[in-house]
Length: 312
Image 1 (cartoon, rainbow, N blue to C red):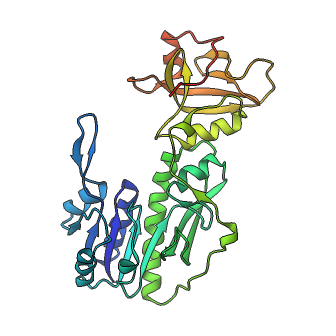
Image 2: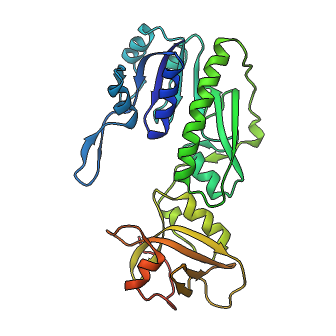
C-alpha cells in the first residue's frame, strides 16, 4: 500500500524500517521539527528524520497539522493509509479523513489500559505483569479507536522502562507490518474498546520521581524502574539530589525510621522503607556519571544517614 508514516522518536524507527522492508511504499514521513538538544542547545533532528533522510524518504516537519495547506499537501500524495507511531502531534479530523483506509496507530499498551502519553512507564510503575502493542484504528479521541490487532509480552520484574521500550519497539514494528498485510488482504476486523476498563497514562513529572521512603519497598522498586532513564528516580542525600538508577526491594520488617541507611556494602546500600528495605544498586550524583553502589561507597560513607526530601 501507499503509506504516509508519522513518527518522531527512536521507538518509531524499527516500525518505519520494517514497513519499508515489507514492500509498502512510503510516500512521505511526518515528524516533529528539529529541537534544541544537549548542553549547547543545538538544533537536532528527530531519530525518524535521521533515518528517513539516510534512506532517501521525503520528510515533512510541520509545527502543526491543523492547516488547510498541510491537509492539501498530504491529500496530493494519495496515500492508502497513514501509520502513526509516537509522533507527538495531534492528528486532526481533516487529516484522519484523507487516507481511504484511515489512520492506524501502534500504541505501547494493551488498550484500553494505559491510554495516553506514557503507557510504558505507567505499566512499570503500576507493577503490571504484562503489556504489549495495540494496533488501533485512530479516531478523534485519546487512544479510543477500534482495535485491529494485539501483541502481548510479559514484563520482567527487573526491567526498566527504557529496556521495555526497546523490546516493545520491535514488537510494534512486527505488529504494524502484520496489520498492514492483514488490512490489504481484508483479514482484520475492528473490535470496539471497552471504555469502562480504560485508565490513563499522563506524562511523567519530575516530582513523581522523588522516592518517598514511607512507601513500601516494592512500590519504590517499581518507581526506580519506571523512571529509568528519564527523569530518573531521586532522593535527597546531604542536600544534593541523588539519582537511583537501579534498585531491588528486600523483604523483612525494620524498626528504624523510613529513609535510614541500615546497611552499606559492595553489593548494595539498603535503605529502610515503609515496608522492607530498598537495596540501591546504581547511583548518580549531580554532574557525575552513573556508578555502582560499591564505587559510590569508596568516597561516600553513608551508613546511618537518613535520606529525605529534596526542596524544589
